Image (cartoon, rainbow, N blue to C red; front, side, top):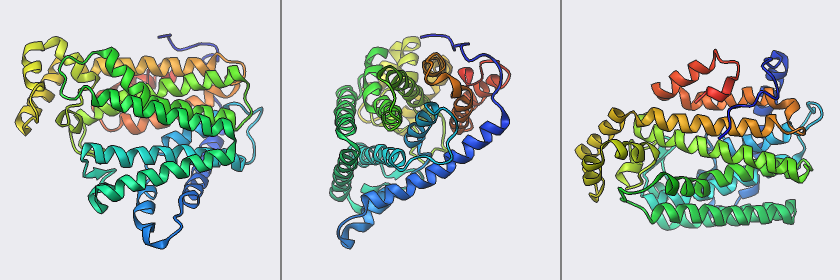
Length: 362
């Protein structure tokens, strides 16, 4: 992985431009939420409950944010309004994401999603699965209305997401899982959709093929970083709106656990083979992960992925002009993660004093 680029230079973006883009982003995300609801409205009021429940609590809207930021990066100047087809492209990406969440919660038996009952907990597994299927169909319908290349991109994304999830599922409770196997799984199940989000912003803005490739690299690397952060918070934080240590209890051994196994092989491998872990055994695993320093090592890997993401947009002529402002918007996203755990907070605080900014923000 590359160190953060100095192509853009060390000069901070103007406060006025940052404020303008932040305000525009919030306005555009509000438009995305409205588009999202209108695009998935069911044909019969009897099924409105579970479908609207799935889309009304959208969280950070990370993927639509990447669609919008990628579109902004390609502009000659800051436009007065983002075109409707970009907004709909962002909504289509989020619909696909929400569909996968419905399916994920059924697979995991998750009872909580974003601080409230999951769709399967509220409506039952059958309705949650059908809700996910319905959202997938609406995603493809929306993508088709935007053009064949957009629909193909969504179909390819869904394939890769399924492959990534199946790779992960094939290694449940496997104490011998490797870094390479972990990266292959998250590249599909998480990073692929963020890569598609960045590509959608490029496609909807008429980007050249090489500019689109740069933005896809931007999205992929951010996706890898965000999944690693999420896996850290799954172990460390009780403030994420999800069950604590859900991955460990479900036999999904993520990067911090993989690193800890290298230091405490015998103790952890004997524990991790158990199906299922008791609460006390799970806490023992968590304690060993902390003792090994695996949290910091995993955060360092995420930091390098962010560096690669920024290098992709800072080094390309089509996106370099606005990269400093977009960098600051990404720091805003990073802050939502960093505020939830001291390990990430300390790394973010370090970033405030480095000339490379977000490059060290993990």
